Amino acid sequence: MEGKEIKALAEGQREYMVALRRELHRHPEVAGEERWTSARIAEELKTLGIPFVVDERRSVIAHIVGSRPGKRIALRADIDALPMTETTGLPFASEIPGAMHACGHDAHAAGLMGAARILWQLRDRLAGEVFLCFQIGEELGYGAPEIIRYLKEQGGVDLVAGIHLMPDWKPGTFICQSGPLMAGVAGWEITVTGKGGHGSAPWNTVDPIRPAAEILLRLGAVQGTRRSAFEQFVISPCIFSAGTARNIIPDTALVSGTNRFFYAEQQAQLIDLMEQTAQNVAASYGAKAELVQGPPTMAVVNDPAAAALAAKAAQQIGGSVQQATPLLASDNMGDYLQAFPGVYVFAGSGPWEGETLPIHNASYSPNEDALPWSAALFTAITIEVCGQPEG
Image 1 (cartoon, rainbow, N blue to C red):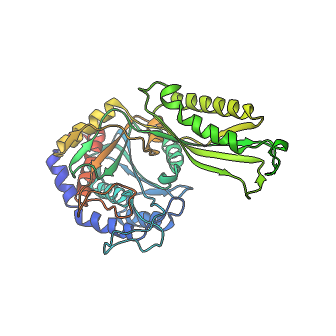
Image 2: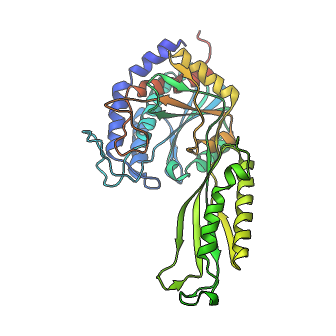
Image 3: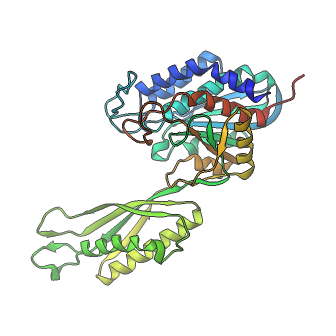
């Protein structure tokens, strides 16, 4: 199937995708609250006649079976919004106070639904199976494990692909590079425990605030002094909490933050180093320190063969393929890429009106010209994996 034909089919879905994207934009739901969004996507699939399931987290997984056996592919889009108050002034702005689609997930869902409509039309020309995964909870790092488990229960897939719209490039531009694309993320808390007492007699206490403050500063010295300057990672202490009154030395102090990393072994080494640092500093004050790490989201690391396939598909539909510096932002698409070979693609979506604003900005809105490109790329990748000769 020619790339021009695929792009034309995607352009034919433009009006539908724009309307759906704007409807989803008006009704944003933050991670964990995607009841209406999940039901709305299920309603669309039911209308089309595409079989689907809704998992225990409310993610929606559609299933298209081709006319002949073949390979299996999963296409993924996230659907949750952010806890922000929108300032775009658009006629289809959020109607939900304190919630906004500021990361483009409304457009992600609309683009995948456009691809679903195309692939449903083409199912007699497909060999294999297509799973279309509308995932909840990405902004808080969940929703992916349940979909991955479902896919494994169905026998797994040969390739998984996702698309994230980015305002840094114009529509029709794709970043399909192999290797690291986005960092992994893990939250952590260090609790320093001393012995509280009256502020007038610190010698009768073990003050946890001073060692906690020193631990915070020492963590900033890890990069460049304890690890190679050529490594890419971030240790960001973002919370410091201690005390309830000006004349009470508390029992505990808390330092909490986030790490960004590209390899699981790198994060394990960082956590060990952070824990050693915290315990040694605390001990020097007569206090104790405990580090607890939250569940990590794995880095987005594209499979070389899958990235090459996506780049070929992007060029077939007339897109421009470029390279970019990996981001220290994270996305639990990385969890899928740990489970299956696959690729996450950045697709240009800017500018639309006025200046180019970053994602997670209260005035951000993607260029809707990106929607046909997304649907076309999803379709072209699927044809590369599950296409069959005509005749």
